[in-house]
Length: 364
Image (cartoon, rainbow, N blue to C red):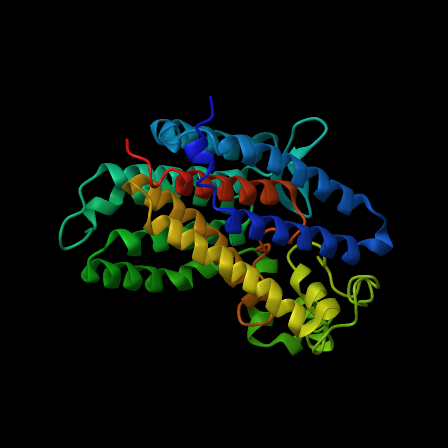
């Protein structure tokens, strides 16, 4: 039986914001791909139904059950990432998808949640020293990060791999880490940067160079960014109107329904519409942090914070990417970008946040 007390604690504002953002995404995908038919629109609608179908029952499973199976869930996610490298489908030079018959899934998306669950489990089960974590205490969590990072970077999918690093860093900051350790890690990473350049693919190097000087290759590596800025700038205050944009319908902007969905929205909905959408994201992130702060246990706090950090970093990196503040690294926009695995992961993540929020006033 479902406890009525738990149902009464559902965070309806958070659920409403999630639904609104998902519907905005459906509308943006419909408009951006209208000239190509309704294939992407219908597919995203199907995935929204699947994600909702997974979100709703998840609310009524006590998250302590997830805590008990944290490491098996993480291990299964690693196996799925390994399976991608062996049996995965290749598209555009990347091997990121597993075929399940009628659908293909991207295991790296679901691995984000498994990674957060494993981190929350580990940090909630150890005693954090008063001075904060040192290098020795970070060996195991570093291994938890390194395993999915290397498997995903191998696909290659540097953008997704970096999301893991940002989530990891966010969680470290909130569980407390020694200042000396932070400085040491920063120096070590900075010293490795020149060597990292040697392992980048040619297209990744081109993206970095075009970020520094977009006009150097306006028809090549700098094309995405230049067209993105044109789309955002042409939106004006109120935009050109729904389905009236040119960047998507005339296919000037590549990846206009995935990583570059925001410029399409900005062109059609203008500054006012974009501001409303960003306000919805702000509400989602702040509600996530509020629920994290009120969680009844450490695992619930870290899990909620980690998922909120995942959504936050996707948002910040994508917006910085499409406006030219960061290189193009292939990070989609939560709830708006086309992608079944990505949308489902975001919805499951919100489901877990709601789950924890519903139980924060319950004892036991």
